[in-house]
Amino acid sequence: MAKRYLIVGAGFSGCVLAHQLVTSSNCRVEIWDERSHIGGNCHTERDAETNIMVHRYGPHIFNTDKKHVWDFVNNFGEFRPYVHRVKARSGDNIYSLPVNLHTINQFFNKNFSPKEAAAFLDSLADKTITDPQNFEEQALSFIGRELYEAFFYGYTKKQWGCEPKELPPSFLNRIPVRFNYDDNYHANPYTGIPVEGYTAVMGKMIDHPLIKVVLNKKFQPSADGQGFDHIFYTGPIDAYFNYQYGRLGYRTVTFSKNYAAGDYQGTTQMNFCDENIPHTRITEHKHFTPWEQHDNTVYFTEFSKETGPDDTPFYPKRLTADKALLLQYRTLATQQHTTSFLGRLATYRYMDMHHVIDEAMQMAKQFITNVQQNERPPVFPNSE
Ligand code: UDP
Image (cartoon, rainbow, N blue to C red; front, side, top):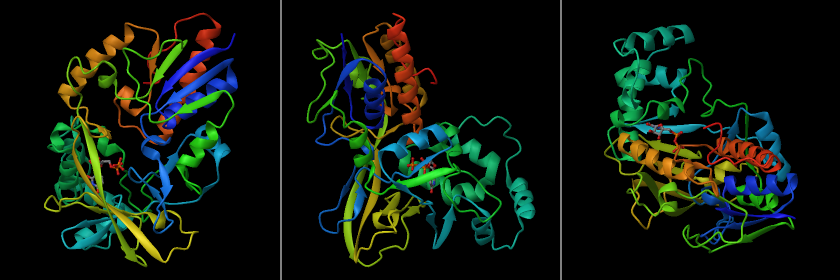
């Protein structure tokens, strides 16, 4: 008999999992989401005033080094080539990010060749830090104090609401440093923007007679889930356990939306690296789709703050206290086998879309094998 599975959350984790489960095993799936739309924080929609496709919860640029993930998402909509070139304001100047040869030459008023720039940054790097333990040490040991203070200190403090010393070194590793003029923000080979937006991609993924989507439905862990053979939960892990040990730290993001005629800032994303400017970045969404024509423009100024009980959690902070708390919740999770946890919020990690998709694909495969062999299903993704 067909199994019945409940998936909580209609973001990429939930949608990929639902698709894989119904296409590779004998089951019916229900996806519940407390929001009025699918897509999670990758949700896109056309702005009512300008018809521009906007990323409602902040900019999302699809990029991956995994061909199987790229091939998979391309089954559900056309992705057009798009290279994300970020500009950053620091002091009175506008620079190119990630830090590349142009940034270095402009910032230090030099005309270095790649080799000269590499040697110069090496001379600025703090050699006393041999094993960086935090974001700041990672930056100092890599690019030195001047570039760190100009581009990373203020932005990171605003973004995360704490000293960069309190954050893990891995947050910095997301952004490359280059000794050539390549200003592509991402280093991954497969990149693009879906022509009809991410919500349409996910919509197509779950458009299946064996998948039922229920919107505006909040999952109550203690009460719901009856009648299902298994639950896959993609919401915050602390919420699942009713915050019994306390709340994990997340940053949330708020946006102020504005309109202008023509082109507002000439590029998709402008970062504001100085601590005294309250916002972190401005995103002008029509530059994501240069193949479309729009006379007017809409742009979003982004502010970061601590997540309160009624805010949407965006970024898992993973400070030391959070990690200890996470361990307690993970221990509870592993004591049961009726629910699997996956995605950014349920595993409490800073994940990109392609990580989320890959893990959901792997978890579906693992789960199907476990069911076939009468084994216990995975509680967390194996690759974690
Ligand atoms: N960051 C920074 N200055 C910038 C851009 C990023 O200091 O101009 C830091 C910041 O701490 C951020 C991290 O680098 O959280 C990763 O940046 P990314 O652009 O990947 O952040 P996201 O797009 O996920 O918000």
